Image 1: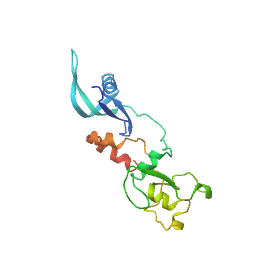
Image 2: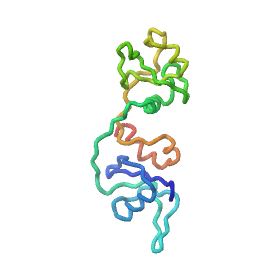
Image 3: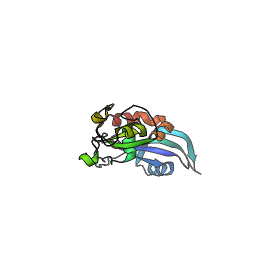
Image 4: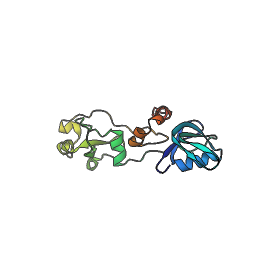
Length: 172
C-alpha cells in the first residue's frame, strides 16, 4: 500500500485530490466515499478483505473556488507542451521569452510570455518577433482554469483515471 495513490473525485465527479491508499481506505471505512475503480490488489485485515481502490468519489458535495494557475516557468512550459513557440522544436532546454520585451513596456502576463529555445531567444534578443523576422506558432493564451492539475507522469501510470479527467480538461 505504500506509494499507492488514489484519485479522489467530488460527488459531481470533479477531480479534487490525489490521496494515499491508506487515506482512501480510511474514507471508505467511514462511509465517506464509494469506489469507482479498483486498483491492483487488496488489503487484508483479521476480519475482512478490502479492495485497494484507484478512483473514489465522495458521497457528498464539497464546494470550493476554482483555483487560478500561477504564472511560473513550469506552467508556461506545460501550457506550450515544452515546444519552442518560434521554431516548433520540442525540448526540455527552454527559456521564457516576453513577446514585447519588458524594457519596452511588455507585461509579465500569460498573453505576453512564451517558451522559446535558447537559439530562438538569442536570435530574437530584445526585439519584437516582427522586428526579428520571426513568427509565433500560435497566440499565447492563459491556460484554462481547471479544477485540478495532475502531472503527466501520474496520468501515464494510472490510465484508468483518464475517463474521469477528460471531461474536466475540456472545461467541465
